[in-house]
Image (tube, rainbow, N blue to C red):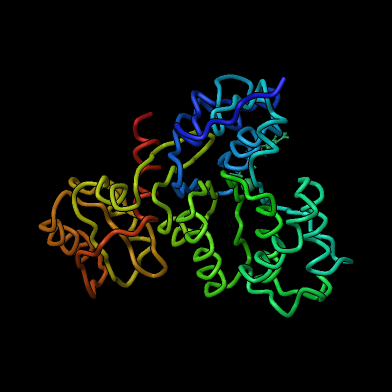
Length: 316
Ligand SMILES: Nc1ncnc2c1ncn2[C@@H]1O[C@H](COP(=O)(O)OP(=O)(O)O)[C@@H](O)[C@H]1O
Ligand SMILES: [Mg+2]
């Protein structure tokens, strides 16, 4: 029986999605929806459960509990239909080193049964999109990391999927190439493709329309990057002082400061209001730490993440 792919409605729904490996719960009761055309980011450290979530959504791994749909299709009961309709670039996407750029694309086009008549034209468009024009006869083994990523992306979308899953697509790629890769993602999203991408690069999550923060198997926050930062509440104070490691512990105990974390040689303190700067100076000076600067800064997504994790821990 075929199962109808739906052209409207959410691209992805996840309801209490859970996956256990033995006694270990890798994904724990995750709930979210992704709208059509949305670029959705799953952000979290290694081991948070991002890949396991993606693999369930791609119909590769059965959920232990809960449910999920992709393009209206239930992933647990119809995994094969899901696999045919999506593009999936896994963390270890298989490119064949002994094939040329075009041969790799052609290989994936055949796997996804792209019609012979449209195949050549499709490949030309993808090679152009990936910035590989003129390199299509080059051996894949000789490509740089950034070029490999773009070729892998092109292979993952050779059948023009409406939904694309990217698992850490830019890991190990330099910042400029990462930016270019994201330009490609935007281009696809503006053409109506829905994208779920995982990353542990905070700057990259800023490119997403909405970001789900994953930590220790759970989704601890979900909103637009701006709303996540605004959701921290209070103000963020940046502290430059002579002994940040010692200062971190001292400030964590100050009333009105909800969390403190090191930011290179600086400290970021989540405080109730800007007036807390005076208490910070006083506390540090009384412990013999000299303070160069305390000033309010605009929080980054990393600050928001640290705050959410802290809340998660103090909630108990
Ligand atoms: N097949 C498996 N068997 C046992 N444990 C697994 C398996 N796959 C993942 N895990 C564990 O689940 C946790 C989440 O892994 P993963 O989803 O890969 O996290 P992330 O992609 O966020 O780094 C990790 O602790 C990992 O070791
Ligand atoms: Mg992973």
